[in-house]
Length: 146
Figure 1 (cartoon, one colour):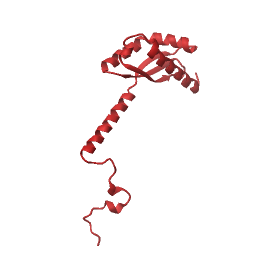
Figure 2 (figure 1 turned 180 degrees about the vertical axis):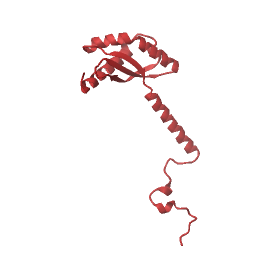
Figure 3 (figure 1 turned 135 degrees about the vertical axis):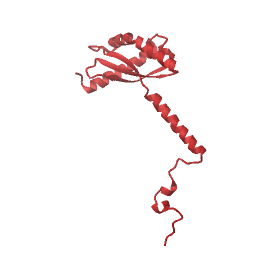
Figure 4 (figure 1 turned 120 degrees about the horizontal axis):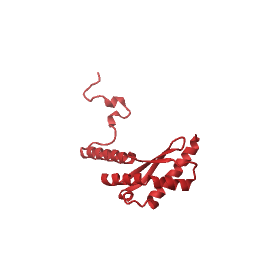
C-alpha cells in the first residue's frame, strides 16, 4: 500500500501525462470532436486503478463522441503511461466525464438571470435598509408611541 503523498504525486503525474497525450498523441478524430481538459485524477491507494475526470466542451453529440474516443484509446494511454512513468505496475485507466464545470456554469447563469430579473423589477440586490442596524427602524410607521 502506497503512502498518501505518493498517491497524490502519482495522480499529479498521470494528470500531466494524460493531458499531454490528449493534446498531442491521441490521433483518434473522436477525441478532437470536443475540447477536452483533464480536470482531476483519482488514484486508488494501491496504485492499481486511476479514474481520470475530463471536462468536455461542445454539444452533447460531441461529448459522447469524445468519451467513446477516450475509452477506445485507454489501452494506448495505459501503455504510454507505463513507458513514461516507469511504475512497477501501470494503473488501470477509467475515463469519467466531469460535470462539475458544467454545473458551475449553469449555477452562475441562473444567478445572473435572477439578478437581471430583480433589476428589471426595480429591486436592489442590497438588503433592506430598514433591517440594517436599528431595530426601531423596522417597526411599522402606523404605530404611535404613547
